Image (tube, rainbow, N blue to C red; front, side, top):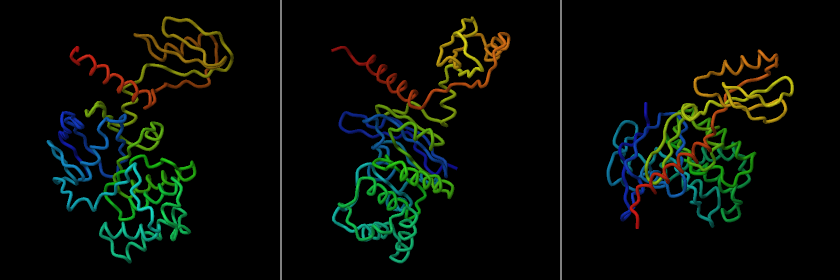
Length: 310
């Protein structure tokens, strides 16, 4: 079942189409990547999903019903890329204040804050002021204040910004745990390797339009180029054959591109006939980063082609 569904959303600023007829749905309990270059429309989408902005056209369904910002916002946790903390407040007081704004009683808030502070090794921070925190420490605090009221939908915009590898690992584990417990995660970032590691499905937007969506593995299969990696048992000269084009990676490793009309078995058969041991053979799939660059640049080229000549 889809927790969140966007149907034909449009949002205009003067003459600019910030969001231009975008539709997609996000399944409950999934980790969903919202991707796009700067100025693509991601922030406007997130602000409509959280009720900060209203769409000019289209619908948002939350849990199967029309989204009502006044009543549904309490089920959403939003961690923006920009810092949204009060610099002069003590950390414990701030977490307590923000939890109560989300509808928790003081007792409930204290219980959940203590739980999260223990879990993320923040117990000694209670009386520190936000202005005394490093960027990474602020990021951990923002994550806690985003999730402590147990929202159904968690929106994380660049959640690993400023975190060292250890703390990034802690937050990543908590994202997986939240999804296992039934929370739905929207994960927005420019780091494609994080998307590949964390997300189930993605949508890629550019210039206000959706240009790609689907499962991460499905999309990588869609853009594969019939390339394979060979690890051989002995060094070989780069072979030439009608079935494939080979490029040496090292004396015992080759990258092969299979020619049209041939199959991977034709490659394997060639090396077997040459009595060359094959230690490993696997398909090379494009990274999300490569797909991202290709699709974004393609959209720009199409836009330029349709612009009137001055």
